[in-house]
Image (cartoon, rainbow, N blue to C red; front, side, top):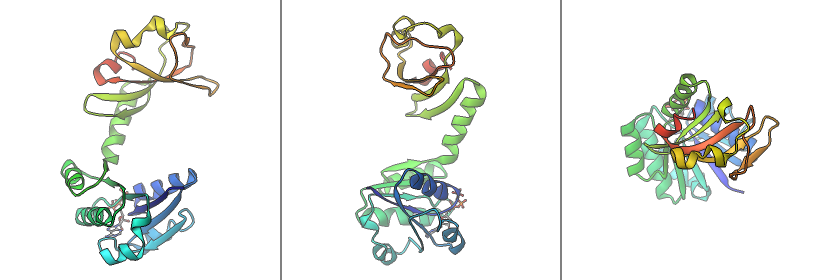
Length: 214
Ligand code: ATP
């Protein structure tokens, strides 16, 4: 089983600990603030109070033995960057770091973060798409041009096959999955799949083309 450590137990870090635990993973929660540590003792596999900008402390915690480390420190940019550098230098293979701004994110990438997440911005984009088109249930940005959307099927698609609708040739959109009202999920649906009323479509494509089905 993969071993996770989450450093920084604010709202983001705590939610991360909780979700990973619910998924059955082992998670060590670390924060320099005693109250923040206290708040996750019942959720995390282990929780410790430590300043992760101190190399010796990280060594004592055996941080290099963790498969994935999530640096969820935000406001204290110096601590976020120092922690990311040290954790990477100590040999952790996959380090995911939270950034509060573009510049912060760029620096985290420079110092070795394998992935940088921007929780506020990513959530704002999802919510904006959801509000703007009541059909969009979820939205994931893949790159500047491409995204994945989860949308309610438009009534004009009902009772038609994917071959007939031909999203790929018409818009370059790939249908990755279809969720039925009864909870069934068809992954990688073929051309013969018929869209039913209340279906939810998970589609990938360029942002401008996806607007056609949102
Ligand atoms: P969120 O937006 O996730 O709620 P936050 O607003 O509480 O976060 P952040 O600045 O993102 O604040 O910090 C997250 C956590 O990181 C805090 O609980 C803070 O105590 C912890 N933290 C900051 N510096 C260090 C450090 N050097 N070592 C360990 N934990 C730290």
